[in-house]
Amino acid sequence: MNTKILTAALLGASLSVPVAHAAEGKVTITAPTKGAILDSMDENRLVYSVDPGPRGDHVHVYVDDQEVGILRQLKGSYLLESMASGQRDICIKVVNKAHVPVGVQDCVKVTVK
Image (cartoon, rainbow, N blue to C red; front, side, top):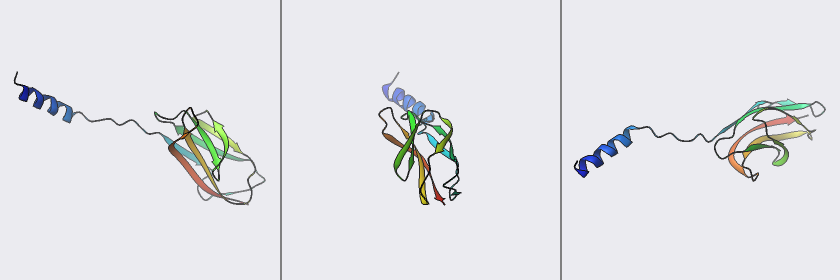
């Protein structure tokens, strides 16, 4: 078979096959919701689900960029410790085995009273 025809056939075949990209992962915080008002005296639960993607291993919880917890379950809830009054950013970040964030996260801004 002519190499030009073979090359064209191979290129045509490879161009017609869709390229699948690996999912990067996803974090979803379902509670508290963005803009929620939390009572500093209540037990406030963070409810979440995580798909760590190919680079992730587990997740860390942050309040105002301070790590407050490590979670190994991909779905569940986490009891937030007492938080000072004011605006707070609560984040869940996917990390690798070395505990380095891989860029997959979800955050909610809440007000604590």
